[in-house]
Image 1 (cartoon, rainbow over the protein chains, first blue to last red):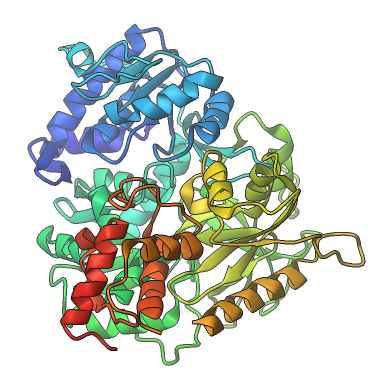
Image 2 (image 1 turned 180 degrees about the vertical axis):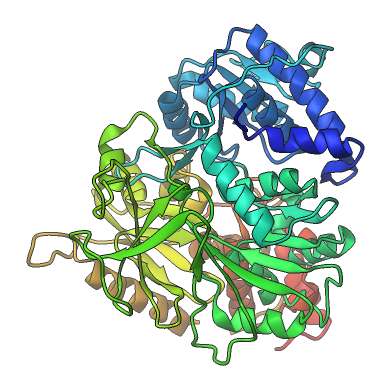
Length: 531
Length: 86
């Protein structure tokens, strides 16, 4: 019988059923409880008529029961689809419309979002993951925990390991989020590599920071379950409070902290890390964007007992495709941290626009081949074909993934990242297509034309999203921002705005984004000058 | 330029200008209402420091006292009294 993703936690339940699997504040769930609860929920999901391959959406903030939901959906042979519970209803509706879930597992606090969703979408049955029901104006849960947490035999459904296990929706340049399909085998291959590479062990305390619609959460969850480790879920309220976040890392006695650069930079800004802080911490890893070297140097000097690892990889190739253990404090603040070496059974290729290989040292597009490759975007063969062309080196049907990232292979045998080839930006770890913001802005009636650019800020800010637009009359900005917030999650909202009589055009008749960037830079300087 | 006792409405105007966010109620919890995130918080701290000529020490910054326009105005006052930079 081939292995499936839910088996990692299942095996840890057999070998260490009484050990803690999930911790959030005072709440603890052992591997045995995780296994039993997910068996029960899985039995109800099958009983309700869900078939193998059906999608089941998850709409809840981070909590131990969210992991019960994921395990249960897999045990029922279904595909889980985490939806950002902070997302506006209009965007969640696009995801529900594309994924067509047969069932929606939600937390009671998702009632408002569900009401909004029900205005434009036909929703499947909703169940509450908690004892309290979901009680909205339009949407009520059919079952709550009292109705699903009942003694039941595990359903015993086994799908193929090449079957989809989850869909993660990322920003799409046309305004429609793209559902990246990931298989059991994709995640199992990654998890086995990780556990071996980083010597994950039973009882180790690791952090769960990113929300579940972000693929880095996959790393936290399954590497912990595979090793029989304790997954300490970072309480959502701490993300804005660097002092309490640092205290939480100390008090949880974390051994491995899986972070993102924006959080590390935020903590640096508030000076929350002392010399030799976090004595139990063994490894700090980050993923999702570039960690500025000055910040890395400061942390490495303060925490000489910690190993620092940079991980690189797009969602389409399953969490991580290359990694780099920083061997010593970088000599210079201007040295960029390499993205390092490729993970087992994957390849990183540096190709030109015609997908021909480039020599060592030359910058080209980073393309990925191997076991991590997603089968493609859910229900979107066109975009799948464009992003996953045939491997130019072979005609056996194997594919590569074009990341859109630029990079090169150094003489040192390490891969190095050099920015983006298109208008995708990263902000606070989120992958954002500027085209998605433009498309949402254009749909507002007061906007005639618009263009959105990313402006590199300081180490902490990362990329600032700046919107220029042409409107009928003078547009009141807070109102405009609020209306855009009904279409986009808050991390996509522009932080700077300019209203223009017309957008600057270049000789090709396209919006001149270089000129726009200059305008935003000039406006920012002027603002500082006034004060 | 600094001024004495920043009134709440000046803080509201500053939030509007710096973050493009309308604050409907001086006691509204801006974090709870999802109107500020970490990025907005840091730029707001900088803007407040510049506008009111105070230094808000980040080493012991307490977000719990910086969640509404009224709280921010009080925080600035307290920072002045405790000897923040002029």
